[in-house]
Length: 241
Image 1 (tube, rainbow, N blue to C red):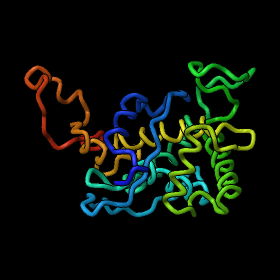
Image 2 (image 1 turned 45 degrees about the vertical axis):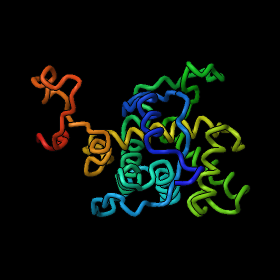
Image 3 (image 1 turned 30 degrees about the horizontal axis):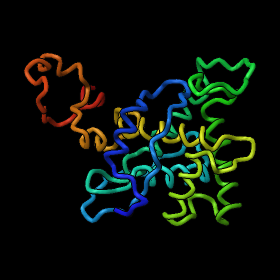
Image 4 (image 1 turned 90 degrees about the vertical axis):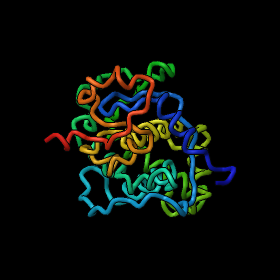
């Protein structure tokens, strides 16, 4: 692991702070640091899965998302990389859902620049936000490095993500900081969500932190295992259907 790489445990700390609710509105929390690493020799073998048809993302957008989530969650001894964990699939499904279309979002304006605690302040739906953000990110990447983000080498991808995180990437009429914050948040949501939504493939996120799955099924064991580890094969919604 190089000095440029943020340890996976610090990523998890950021995940715990940011929260991982899937169907919430845009929440401008302070993002955890961007990270990247070459796949470790002892990385867990990713589950084999057939490519799924894209529901919301086009091929260019999908390539950006795959490259980004693989930088944010690199393969190592703790889990496969982000795309192998299904996070690109999770993001595509979320953007194609009612949430991605802005269901239950107030979109009548006025849309003024708000304080950080006021959260999302644009007229765009989540799907429109990501589409516009990816266009802006690739345009900035071409201007800065000569290629779209997914065509950059790993070191330049890390550099680009850090510039977005710090708001130093000058997107045209768009906040690179806000885009990175939402990209990181939905990546964490996909990594820790129930696998039924497309991410957390083979329950890789749950296995990494020792989460047993649906908590209601263990309610009778809470007192017995209070402050003690409870090691069990994690179970998802699909395991009960």
